[in-house]
Figure 1 (cartoon, rainbow, N blue to C red):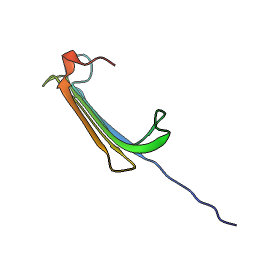
Figure 2: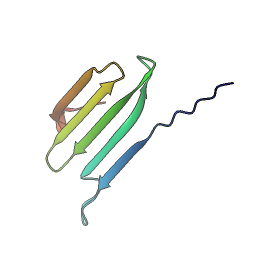
Figure 3: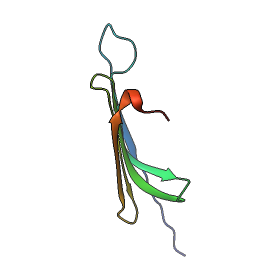
Figure 4: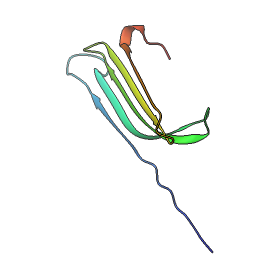
Length: 77
């Protein structure tokens, strides 16, 4: 009998400046499942309101790397 255990992890950091509402920096990095490919990959996402930056990097199981950088004000989910 053979048993396997797979662990996936993800960490995040949020920065807030006193006197201002909402987060000015939000970043997460770690394993994430994509339904489109039905596979796990690594994803790093940063939204920086102070610098108006949206940056996302996805690394798939086959080594493919997708990077997207844009002005946060132009980005829509």
